[in-house]
Length: 256
Image (cartoon, rainbow, N blue to C red; front, side, top):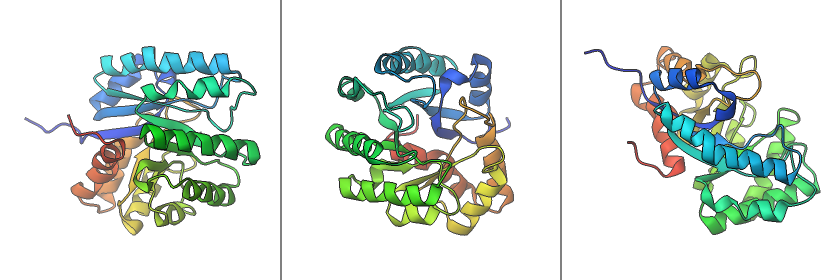
């Protein structure tokens, strides 16, 4: 009997933007578990964000499970969508999730940093890991400031995934002891590019994420990455660490 595709875990997708058929396809290609994160679009008020969170917990997790994918949910107030009112009530709703995410900095500034710090404090109190957003623009300076806020919070580095990391910020993030998420997006970071980065820098505390379901994304980015890692000469053990064991370790879950 032929072996099935290698398993992988996606720590950052948006299930509401992925059809049932595509979720089934991902399961067939080896997706064993996934974190569906709160997104940064379509919710400008606390009530809208609350409805979005409820949908992720009550609807999208069920859709993932029905497709054969172990579901996890990460909720947070995204720095690009901070409502002007109702933030305190929103933060009280977070204990029901596996992680807080996405939180972080987008444009930066006092208001973003204050909410970022509050959510980090909450994650420490709840003993939850965090999935941290870094912006497309001003990537290096905003990431440097973000890392400063993380250090000031004294959060356990093993509980932090800094996502959307690039070649310019990879060593900054890993140098602080955090997990670095390489987000595979068309035109920004292709599977082959990620494979070369891992080939040069190793896979320790590096995971691959897709961000599918929001914007221009590649449904099969992570399965394609597995193939690219093999072609780049990485061993099966190293590929498995980046795509499966590392993500599970970050969440604190055992393989099923």
